[in-house]
Length: 133
Length: 133
Length: 133
Length: 133
Figure 1 (cartoon, each protein chain N blue to C red):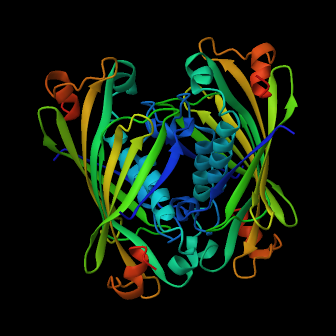
Figure 2 (cartoon, rainbow over the protein chains, first blue to last red):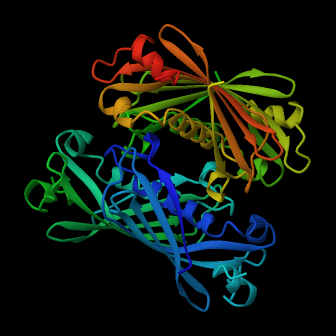
């Protein structure tokens, strides 16, 4: 399957008053994983030339606390391709135990940064998003 | 209705490469609004004495970009009370135009910080969460 | 004196593993105070028209921990005007007790966003930075 | 020399309105590098057993903007050992060009988390901080 994964070690600054990784921080980790998922494509393509990756919905389940010293494994996989939007499935689990800390469906569109219009998911764009190019 | 609201002005550090408020930053703003929603109750009650406010799901729609200088109005309202979990409806709109930037359903449980067990939503806890105490 | 102040209440997401406000978070709070200090001037002037506020040095002393529920008072004052750089003195104290949590000297330049050159501190720019316009 | 280094790739969420890495975000990157510098020692030693790593001063020069796609190399080295405080020298440079983006002196103390007293830098503590243990 076309799945990518990264690892992030939980540090003191990721935690909040409950001593677990903060709910907003998980979203930042998911974003890091998405940039990594498409890392083979230059930022130039996505930013300067005009494709904007715009998140339209995130549905995230927080299943189990992630704590100091945990090494988190974040897996990312394209799970749905629509005519104009797509969904990435992202799961964060603790390395070693495999316990799921969080699972999210992240739905996004690609816009033309100049016209701000949503681009149809086809041709070269589809190939890049499915990492076939 | 038992709705609260706060205002946050969009600053340069809230933005990302797309020059709009970053998706994770919105979650931090929603958390700020939740703390404010229950601000009449001392942190001591929620933290030191033993009630942990633990988010189990966030389903957020990003509807329209929020940009530098926008004053965001964030409204928070308890929208569902279950036996063990509750849901807050939170909406972020741009002051002046009223345009909705983001809308989220945030589902949470209250745990006993010592035993880590989920507490039933009843009695004094219910009164605090519905802000009737 | 030409001093401004803002208040920020310490929330659960500001804390780190030590249960005090994280060192990097203080810098975000100082940046919030700087935007507020120049809030009478539209972002358009600073961003779109071409003045970039670029920090070149921050020297910050962390004096005392800020904890959950503290209301922080952040004072900002222009303390030095040089030919090309300026320094803001910013102090964060706990409301009520007045205990100093952090004190920082923030040195910055204003650049022309198009040419990336540092602008001389004179004329209209000087009047804006000293808040006399 | 006893120098460690890590790499962090600049992503869209690290940037601010000026399209460069935000000043506060650099501090988070430096903190990541400090955790990494002492990664051979378990969090248990530093947190649960009672050594608190408390930053008392950061003096950071922002030398050159870091932008989207840059791979940052962050070097950390113990540069001063005092009786009660120590200083780490941390430098952030852009991989490939070697251009210095930021350089910081981070002064810290180790406190006993129970008594909140500053510990003298000697014995086992000194060996850990100099990474000789």
